[in-house]
Image (cartoon, rainbow, N blue to C red; front, side):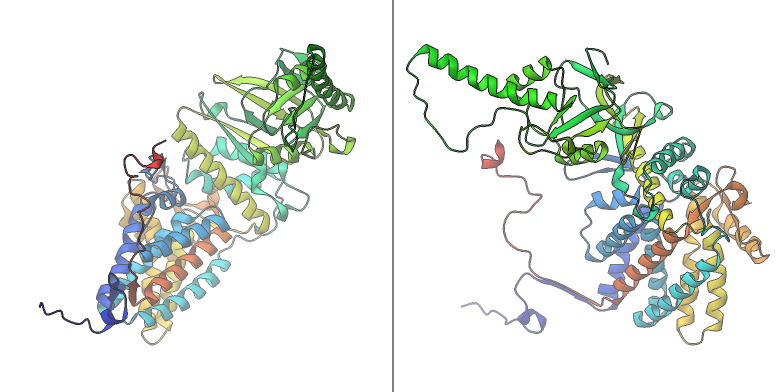
Length: 559
């Protein structure tokens, strides 16, 4: 009989197969190390000269981007501590729509500083206390750096909008920000409601069409639907439908969510037919019924039928006869947006619409853009609520990246509608924060001052990274920045195009105050959460097949 040793300690308490890591060196240092690895990935993508990452996710989809939110989303981070940083980045992306890279990179940097402090002998709780004091002070200093007069802004003034949006778009598409900002600002101003706080990001749609270049991009007041119309009528204009030509104007529109077809009965029934005459009459009544319904739609004044599902052959025949344009939109979300654009109310089944259910459009036309046929729904008069940015580019990955830049621009517009205050960009704010926080740390007594000084030093990461990504001498840039700020020039930042220091008010590089505020807040919160962990206890993973495991050959998943 073999002698088996009884488990003792924590092993005897937990199920077999668990993992338990504790202690400073094991848990805290390893957690910090995982977070540092993640922030190293995102850091090289920070700023306008940031490098792109090529990420291939578990579905073999290729992403070529320098957008940190997309990168960390597709990486499927497994480490629990690094996941906290990913969540902080996601929170920033959802709250502001820009600055996720700053959040993750800065959190990684302050954790790196915490690592050095722990090795010097400080306890994590002393570091957390110092960091909390530092972030409160940093936010206080940040509000002092706000450009005077920037809190009053007209969100419909294109110049003011572009001035605030430029930095966010340039960090994704450097060199093309002028073209993009023009398009985004126009689109946002067109759909901005009377009370700008209620601005809805979903009202700006993006249509990506391969071919041409960014210079061919445009905006459409209304929607751009990929695909052709179902029938032969391709254009409706000012109440008259034109056959086989290519635009449709001011046509009343009716939307059927359940499709345009003969509806089957709910119960099964048997029809007994004795003669050929009866069979003929049976087919005729079905035909007459469909014609009656389509005629009722045409009599109501509608010129366009939009179907949410299939369009039957017979129904289409009668639509053609009554000169009705037929559009099919299979996505219910797209159908809702179409209803919002036109003001139509979706009807569930094929029935004569009431005048209240009809929507209106200025024109619907089928156009060919870059080899693809698209249906353009224009609605320029009256209260238009949806605007589409038509992006053109040579490859799908370029178009995806342009879409992310547009997304960032639109989210920045939403943020400025709520709070339009701006702070100097080009690392001017960060150096000023570093300088003032270092001065603040000298006034503190106790061990907190070391943590505050390290927190201040972490701000140097931003100018250092911006300079390195642009191929400049980082140390030289940082020392020159400190010298400028020490002599009272608080708005001096890096001009990355010329590789020199300039006053940001001349280069017009401004960042939104709320972007910086939340990025620093989330980064400090995430870092403190990671530092508070001193043990990791992982239960045995649940049984069953792994999600990423290949299905067994000959299994049911093969078809």
